[in-house]
Length: 135
Figure 1: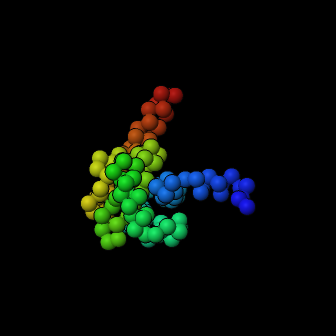
Figure 2: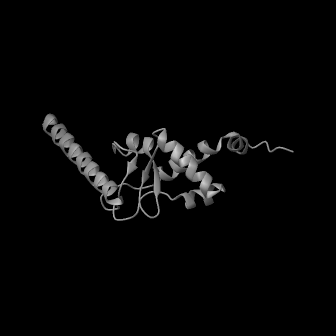
Figure 3: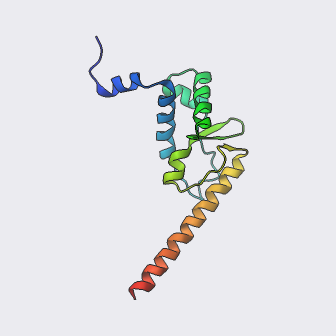
C-alpha cells in the first residue's frame, strides 16, 4: 500500500539527478561564508552525499558531473574532490564563479575572501552615503 505522505511521494518521483542537486543545494545553504571560515575545507564529497541520499557513490559522482556540465554545480579539485551549488552561491552569497571547475582549494578561498571584502566595502560605502545623506 503506497504512503499518502506528500514528501515521500515527491521524493520518489524525483529523478536521481534532481535528488542529488536538491541535497547539495540544501547543504550549500547551511555553509557560513566568511573570511574567518576560509581555512576550513568548503564543499561536499561524493561519499558524504552518497551516504545522505542512500545512492551509490559512482552514481552520485555521475550526476554531480552532469550538473556541473549544466552550470548548476561547481567542482573543487583536490583530494577529495568537493562540490557546491553554483546557482545558490552566485545568487545568495554574492560569489561570481567564472569556471565551474576550481583548480585548487586555495583559489576558492581567495574568491571568498575577495568577494566578502568587496561586499563589506560596498556595505560601508552605502552606510557612509546614507549617513551623510541624512545629515
